[in-house]
Each structure stands twice: as structure tokens, then as C-alpha cells.
Image 1: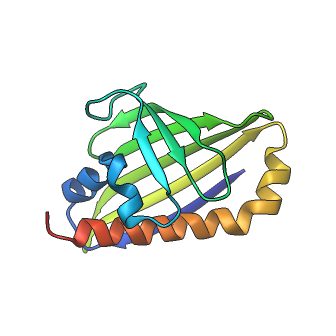
Image 2: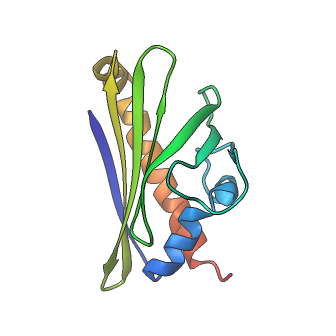
Amino acid sequence: MRFRHSQTIAAPVQRLWEVTQDVASWPRWIPTMTSLHPLKPGPLALHSQIQIKQPGLPALIWTVRQLEPPHLLSWETHLPWGLRMRGTHRIQPAPEGCQNQLELELSGTGSWLFGILCGPSLWLALALENRGFSRAARTPT
């Protein structure tokens, strides 16, 4: 089961990428994120692990599975009951700046039930995250 939200952002691809890879700063911009803590210092890289706390969920470890700067970040986590969540950020140039597509894919035990029960909330979370990314990318550094 997949949920997607796309938004055009009036900022260059590189600026949105800077915001995307600065995961520790996300809680300043994104209300769906309480805290993000990289488990090892340094820039975001393939296999980096980040502990993410979100409202209503336990703190989860997300592992970077794909990283293609400045266009793609994909990471995943596993919940205790066998549910896997994979989040993907795709950034593409657009005439007005760039297009930010956020996707959440659910798989594993109970993914369909979780998706049905939480689908509207998950889509809303992606929309709120995109608004936060837009604000952050349009704010001067």
C-alpha cells in the first residue's frame, strides 16, 4: 500500500536537497516530527541510521537504503509486529522551482489493515511534511 503527496516548491533543487539532508533540523519545520537523531555523526549517507520520534509512534530507527543527491532519499523502518515502512523523497526540477514528491510504502504483516485504518492520517502527514519542506526551502540560509 502506498501513499503519495507532491508539491511544487518555489526553490531550487539544491536548496530543497540541503533541507532534506539536514534531518536533525526537521522538527523546526515539520509538525509530524518530534525529534530526529542520527546514530553516528556526519553527513547523511547510504546505510545511515536515524532515530525518529513522531507523535503517536514509538521512536523508530530508519535506515537509508537509497541516496542519490540531490534527487532521492529513501529509507525504511520495521515496526515490532512485522510492518515495514519505506519513505521516499524525490526532488525534480520544475519551471517554478522544484517538485517534491513524498511517498510512504507499507508492506508486511498487517500493512493493508494499517493502511486502511491510518491512510487518511498518513496522507495528511505527507501533506504537512511537504508544507514544512516548502517553508524551510524558501527561508534564506
